[in-house]
Length: 163
Image (cartoon, rainbow, N blue to C red; front, side):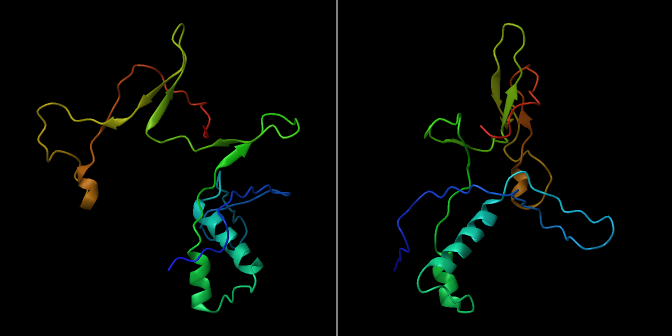
């Protein structure tokens, strides 16, 4: 049986104060201890925050000591987060969503007459290699292959982290 707590909707999180999402390294009161902030909150961090808020605001509120209540809230699907920005401060200019830059695409610098371009990284399978060739790592990683560079362009190290 599927239970719907509310209609699907987008939630815009706009922090009033600085938002700090840190990694899981221990943070102690020892001299020199540092908290390391993440560049963007992890999806599970946002999902846990929204589910906790939902559980505390629905009527009747969730009893967090009751496993059935916790399971009911944990079934709530949460997708994201996505970075959103407005291009101007006009009345309701609309939002633009940005996604993290993919790790298997290399943005290339513009060079002379050549405009900026992108190079997709794909596993290299030279002709004549046996199908069992790959790396020597154990388990599922044993099928890894080197990535093929298909362009002579230089990577753009100043490309944005979100597209």
